[in-house]
Image (tube, rainbow, N blue to C red; front, side, top):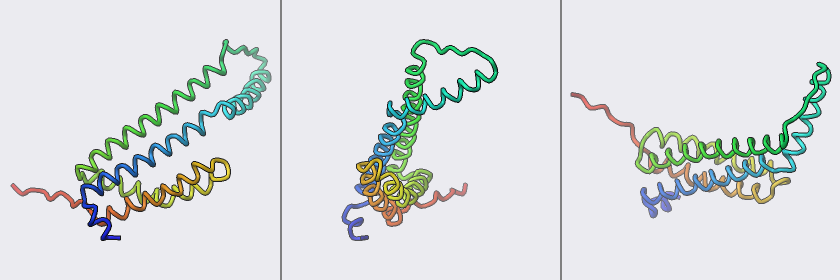
Length: 167
């Protein structure tokens, strides 16, 4: 396997590592978006929550009236929140990937943690969700191998600690 990395060279490896990690980010983001913004699932959970809320208000003897389009507004708030969180997630990772390409140690350590943990957790997640989301399940299993490629390459191309200069 070391021969493959040597053929690629460090620069090409770093760009491939960033591409593979970014593919994983997009895949995870799309899964999270689809999972938490599905309208039918939201409507079911919203109805369940409203039954409990109405019971609490009735128990206290307080009349309750929801504003017009309340459910739609809450749904849009959920979608906006999910998109905002995923946007921060993507931007944070893009910044780390940029620093990784420039061989910054903190980014190297972050990518090391990310890739080794995702090597095991992505396929595990894929197996767990396979029955409900077979496409995502398959993609997460495949992504585990890509994360392993990244993780193993980090061992081949380490970033050394900065040596303090004596004045």
